[in-house]
Length: 150
Image 1 (cartoon, rainbow, N blue to C red):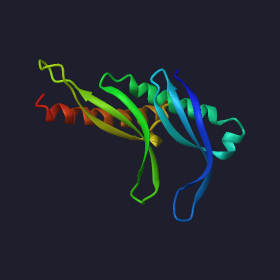
Image 2: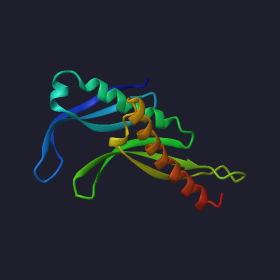
Image 3: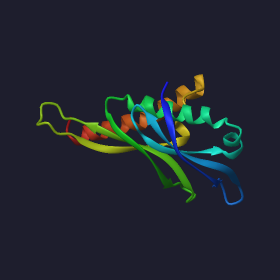
C-alpha cells in the first residue's frame, strides 16, 4: 500500500456540464515512494467529513502500481481539455524504451492516463480500470519500440 502527503487543497467547483457543477476540494498529493505529484478533486462533503483519505489513498496506490512498470521512469499530474472543453485531470507517465544492443541511450514518450482510471480499489472494477490504464502505457511503449525498429 502506497502512502501520500497532502501538499495542498483548495475549495472550488468541478464543472461537469453546462448546467451541472459539483463542490469539491481540489487536492494535490505527493505519492511515496515514487514522489509523484498529482491532483484530484474530492467531494467537498467527503473532505469535510474526513472521508477523502480513502479516495486519495486509492489514487496514490494506483499511481504507485503503475510506477512499478519497468518501462515507466517518471510521472506527474496535469490538466488537459476534454472533448467538451472542460478541464480533465490526468497523470502523465513517462515511458522509456531502451533499444537492445545499442549505445547507452533511450527514447521516451508520454502516456496520458485519465485520473478517472486511477482507482484500483474495487475488486472487479479496479481490475478493469488497471487493465485500461496499463494498456495506455503498453501502447506508448509498443509505439516507441516500433519507431526504434525494435
